[in-house]
Each structure stands twice: as C-alpha cells, then as structure tokens.
Image 1 (cartoon, rainbow, N blue to C red):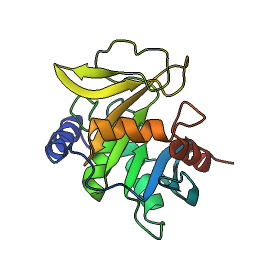
Image 2: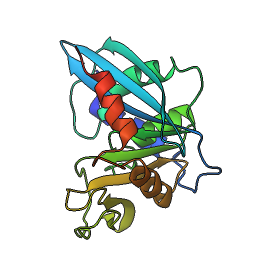
Image 3: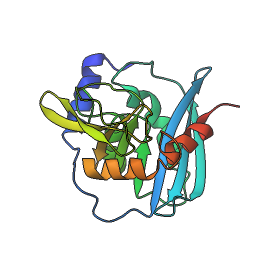
Image 4: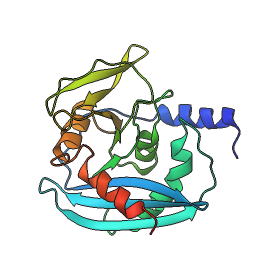
Length: 209
C-alpha cells in the first residue's frame, strides 16, 4: 500500500486542481455512483438519469479486486478504480455526477467527489449521509431548508433537508460546480426519498446478489 504521507501528498496536490464555480450550462445526463464490498471485491454501480425529466436512461457496473483498506478520509483510493470502470462502460459521458460521499468537505479538500471530478474532468457533487468534518447549525424542519457547513472558517458545504422532518444530508461541491448547484441538483433529485434518486439507484446496482 502507498505510505500514508504519500497518500496525503497526492490529495493535497489534487486538491489544488479543484475548481468551484457555477455550472457552465445545464446538464442533460446526470449520473449517480456508489460502491459496495464483498469477499475482497469492490462493485461499483452507475445510474444515469435525464435532466430535467429525471428519467433513468442507463445503468452500468464494474467489479475490481479490493486492494485498499478502509481508512476515513481516503475513500477514493478504495472505490475509484471500480467507479472509473463502471463509468467507462457508458456509451456517453454524463454531464454531472452525484457521488455518495464528500466533495470539498474533507480535511484536505479532496473527498471522493472532488477526486473523481479532477481526474475525469466531469462536474461532480458530493452527497453524504453523515458528516466527515465541519460545524453547522441544524437546518429548519421543512424540505429545502439548509445551513452552511464550515471547516476552519471556510464554507465547504451545506446541511440540506431533502424531506420534511427527516434527517438532513451533507452536500458539498466536488469539482466544476458551485455550492448553489450542489444544493439545486441534490434537492431536485430528492422527489420521494432522503437520498438523490441517481445515488439510490447506483446503490441498488452496486449490491451483490
């Protein structure tokens, strides 16, 4: 395995290449990605939806050997090989990717969504079920309420209520999107559930049968 100081150096170098800015144009194809593990294998699922119709148009999956252990803050080194394999099976590149994980809301500003965005050049958004870093105030109970997530004085994401009266999700821009974009698309794909539908579908695809 790569020594820890080298992993940190890789993240710090890639984090310098992250760009946070408004989407240049509305996406047409939005993918969700997720991964699962079993018996030394990582299985990634990708689900592509049309926007703004929110219609599922494509599925793909890939399996690779699990070669990296679980380490908080280094999820991308464990999951990216499988995610890239699944994305590579799509006939057309998505315009935006929703990732089950963090974007810049990460100790070194390079969660899995940011890492994936930098190496693919595709805009990415992190949508996580729990907080990795940062401080926040609880958002209001209504759907669409949100509060900023701060880390070391910097706004790195949002704590977003995607369903009224349900626990919020932790949203952060990954690469080539703004926080406003991230909130818009996560909320836009949470029409029935707490988790964005592309990520929910990717989770289903990634499960071992």
